[in-house]
Length: 179
Image 1 (spheres, rainbow, N blue to C red):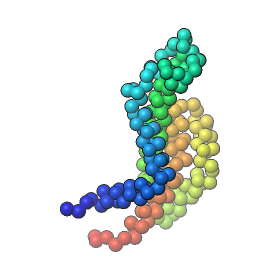
Image 2: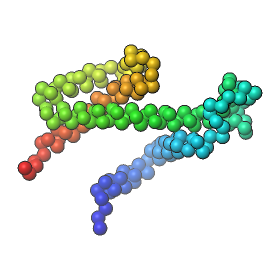
Image 3: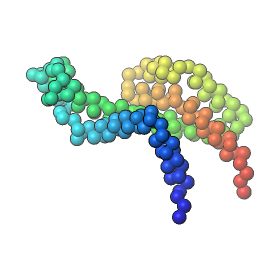
């Protein structure tokens, strides 16, 4: 029984990556971050929001691995729970940008012509600005909100996905299909 093409491709990719020490180290660091973030409720030694004014500004030690802040909150616990929020935001940004960019790119590649030209010029305009500066400007213009920051960051990432999907759509559009 032959393996599924996706599984063969995944095995080949993992085999190639396992030969690169930098890729292995990066994968280990990312996996550790994800495991720490997901396991934060189990791993955090203290409540990250509990105030303890008697323990404020303590140095790192056995009781508090990273010490405490000015309100006596455990910094290590706050870092673990903060990682959960950061990873969630990153996944949300990639999802919004990926889906939106894929739809825009597929539309552009499928219809071609003037529609493709207009859409790709709009993507070029967005790409002509430094991504981080444009995201900061958009987030500032939309107002202080986590949702606005997510949308602004996703907006500047859309052209990258749109260009990638458009290229694939152009290739698929030219393939001979039986009607």
